[in-house]
Length: 430
Image 1: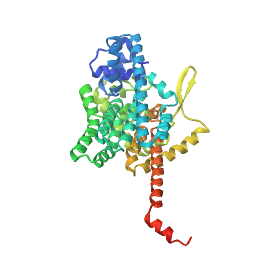
Image 2: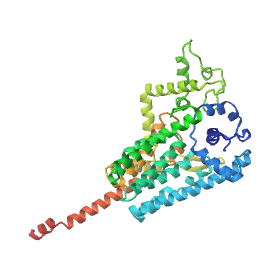
Image 3: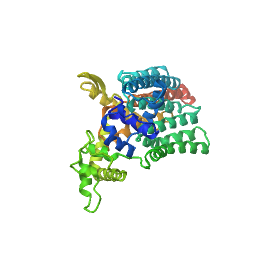
Image 4: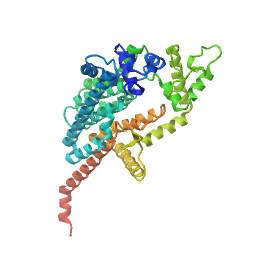
């Protein structure tokens, strides 16, 4: 499937950014026409996944794939690399959790993050979500390790690097980096690091969205993070954005080709794209889409809340249907049970922000749930969006539970060994 739909998009934009010659025969016809022109005009996809694919493909076939067979052969190697990286990420999380939180929680973590099998099967699809899952598991390991006394700065730098790559996979994760900045900088400073070191880590975090802007400028000569948001918002609100944008044009203004209802519309996106559309036209549509969301803020809040509700440690199950493997939501009786567990997880994550040992894992888990909810305001939701972080929130919530249990035990031991209590017991007539 790396010649059509999202997989082809990721490969196409990476080839365009790195100025790699594109083999037209390895793409569907729309990439040699309107949709290809759009991707050359607007940085609609991140370059992170395609950039991973290109060197692996070169190593596998000795050059950039020029036939469908070579694309498939390279894709098989990419899937193998992803599965190996996923195994390494799971082992890393297991080791960090075991050292900090004990063997029982480490095995429980492995259970909820390594299974069910569709976490592995997704690596066979050339999409961003399997790589995001690897990144988020390693980020969880970094967050858990930063609770310890040593190498906090090194773990913080590693976490920043992971978030940097996540932002190159999908731009929304640059927001995640900024939301995590207070927790990361605060932990680095609390570890005894100098102010200069803390500011350096903070600067690295801030550079994440700047690096995305740099990529967009170098590749597409546009310094905008939300390029292409107009297509997403228009699709989510069933064409209302394009309709409103077209009506807002005055007779004196130039009417973009996509505002002409007679033009053929691209399937799925339901809008005309072609080489006769200027970059400024797409930018005007993007700006109007943002204003549309602000104007309809009640619907936006509803979409955000829907995204919060959809966040789950078990967001989907895998089922075979008519020869296809699909993700589907949980059904009764499991859906209500998991819903109650997710609500409890939210409470534990918020509580965990109070404690130094759990602050970073809980902050990370909350961000990994909140950012997709914000994305739900601007684009249609798909179940696979919550698969990359599946189980991470449950692990962080379990850390909070263990922390509370250990605190209770320490309190009881302290009370039992208190000299004041011993004298009170001796003086008691009982």
